[in-house]
Length: 458
Ligand code: FES
Ligand SMILES: [Fe+2]
Image (cartoon, rainbow, N blue to C red; front, side, top):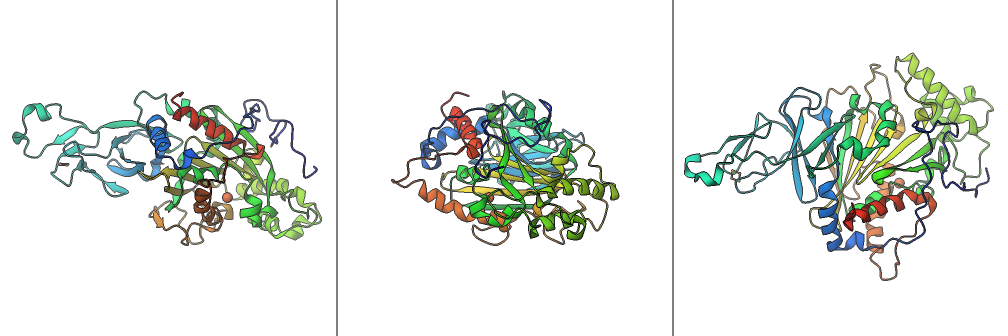
C-alpha cells in the first residue's frame, strides 16, 4: 500500500472477511465532521462543575477489580473527584459486592482511610458510629443522648449502584441509571474471550499529572503521536493502518497491529530487531524465519503463538489469530482505556482532581492471566518487570509515583512528559482549539459525547 493512501471508509479493516456483528467486524463509519474543539473544557471551573453534575454523577466508572476483594469483609476505597466510595464484599456470591459513599452520617467524617482493607463492620474513627457490611446501621454510640427525631431513621450507609462485568467492578451514583451492560453495549461482547475475570493484578500504580484529566485521556485514544513520542516501537507496530470503530454511549476502539513495520519507516525488507524480539517471544529464531519478508512476521507470530500455547496447555481456542498478536485497545467512556491481550490486560484510568481542573490522577493496572508454567514470561508489551510474582498469591501494593519520577515505565513516561506542556499550551491566547485528523476520530466521537452530557442533553 502506498504510504499516503487513506481509505474512503476512514478506517482500515483488520479482517475484511469478518462477519457483521462478530468481534472483528468494522463498525459502520460515522462522519464526525470537521469542526475544532474549544479549550474551555480543560481549564474552566464552570465546565468542570457541569461535567461533575451532568456527567460524572450519572455514568458508570471503573472502581476496581473484584479479585482484590475475595473474602467477605474485604474492601477497597475508590476516590473520584470530590467523592470517595467504599467497595466491599458483603457475601460469598460472585456479585455480592456493594458500594457506599465513604462518609459517616454523624458529622461527615470519612469512614475508611486506607486504600485496601478487611473489616467486620465500618466504624467511624471520630465518635464510633458503626455500620454492617451490608450498609445497615449497627450502632450509634451513646444513642440515648440523641433525640428520637435525629436518629430514628437508623441511617444506612448511602448506597451507590455497583455492578461487576468480567471481574471489573463499576459504580454509578445515579440510582436510576441503565444497567452497566446496557451502558457498555457491544464492546462488552467483543471482549468476552479474554476472560478478565480470571486475571489478577500484578502491577498497580497511581500518579498525579499537572493537567486536566481529559488532556491525559486524549493522548491514549489516538496513535497519531507514536512516530514522534515513541519512535522506537515503529519497527513492530503499524501506527497507520488502524481499525477505528466508534459505538453508542461514547465507546470506541482501535485495533492495533503488532508484528508489522510502520508504513512511516523505509525499510520493509530486512528483519529488524523489534520484529525479531516479538518472534523470539514465541520461540521463532531469525534462522527459523529465514528469508521471508518482514511483512509475514505477524502471521508467523500468530501461528507460532498457537503452538507455543498448546505446548504449555494454555487454551487460546477462543481467540482469533489477530487477537493473538494485536492490541485490542478499547476506550470505555468516560475515563478508562483497556489494552486487551491473550496474556493479560492493561487498564489506564484518568480521574479528575477533587477541586482543581488543572490536576489529574493517572492510574495504571496490569492484570495477568494465570499460567501454571513457572518459567512463563509475559510479553514485553505488558510492561511487567522481571521477577514479578505472576502466581496471583501476592497482590502488589499500589505504588504512588511523583510526576516525572521513575517507575511509570518507559513508554508511558514518554506520554506523561508532554502532558504539563499541553495543558499550558491549550490556554494560550494564540491557540484556536483542537483540529483533529481522521486518525483521531475517536477524539471527535468522545468529545461529542462529553459535550452532550455537559450541555444536559444526555
Ligand atoms: S463523624 Fe462519624 S461518628 Fe461522628
Ligand atoms: Fe503514547
